[in-house]
Image 1: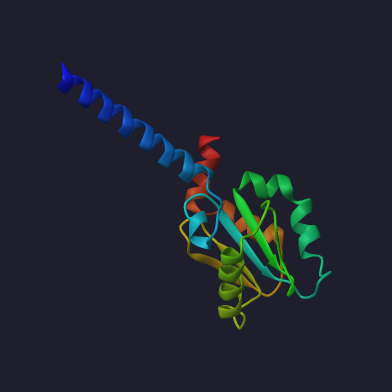
Image 2: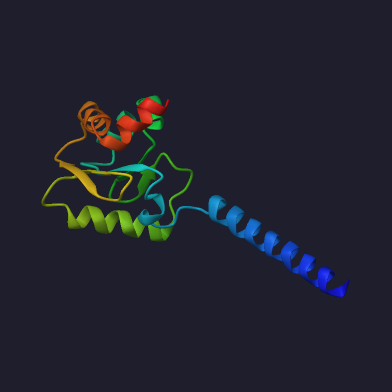
Length: 146
């Protein structure tokens, strides 16, 4: 009888621990660019100025952005603005590093759910980005599933 009690207690403890790990993982803030892999597509923008219009363009396309699982970040020079609630310091560092690395190739980056850079452009053209995403095999499967 005591063996069954010990086994049941261990199983209950293990279940609680695994549940807490799952809840913590799903509820955790996104603190690195890698945290978005397989969950979201990313658009990273190095703004031309504080009022370059990129943020307004991205905000006005909210429905299209949400439909494509896009998270966007705009580095204004003084701050990183996003469609996320908050941007952690480590995430901001990652974003600035990737944009600095790609500066000579373009100031707008599209990163796929697989984490690969899908395009580098000199300006933000959302229609072109949406067309590129809609042509991706993973996105085609998503559209068929909907």
